[in-house]
Amino acid sequence: MPASVARVAMEQPRRYLGQLCRHFAHRLPVTLAETSGSIAFPAGTCALAAEGDVLALRIEAADPAALPGLEDVVARHLLRFAFRDPPEVSWAREAG
Image (cartoon, rainbow, N blue to C red):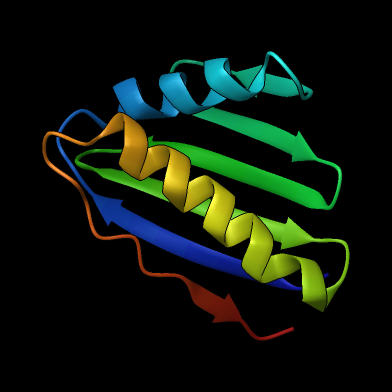
């Protein structure tokens, strides 16, 4: 499966992990634990983990064409929630 990762440096990554999961839980299957979560989009999944002062994101897409759209929707929502101190979200494609 095509995949990409982002390690987003930010204050309170657990807070934003929870916000993202709760937001998408209204429409999509979501799991949420204290320091990790996942969101099942129709075109793929996003795994999230709070690691110190980093929010680690990993997206797996059903096909390569879906990957940019999933990256965009996750990054846009994270930036919307963290508007007071917008983090830099930089995706790196995993070799597969």
